[in-house]
Image (cartoon, rainbow, N blue to C red; front, side, top):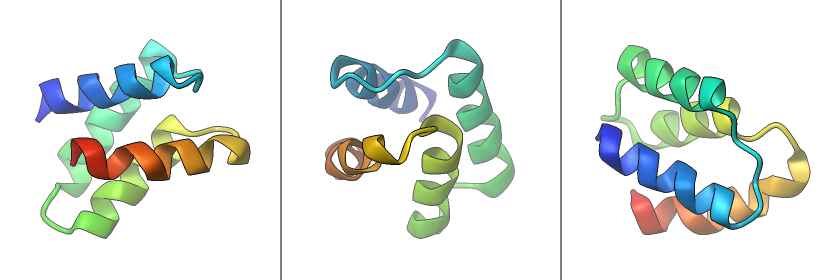
Length: 68
């Protein structure tokens, strides 16, 4: 799962979304705490830790199903 999250973060970055290393680590910690069993909770955990600008939400929504 960690590798998949790293690839997702790379995809976000390649699409112009600024994601810091700290935000990537926060995303991983959130998934460790919240789990990945419930898809919506998993998606919201990643979105809340990786996306800081509402303008980037459509990019997140487009890429999320490609990785998860």
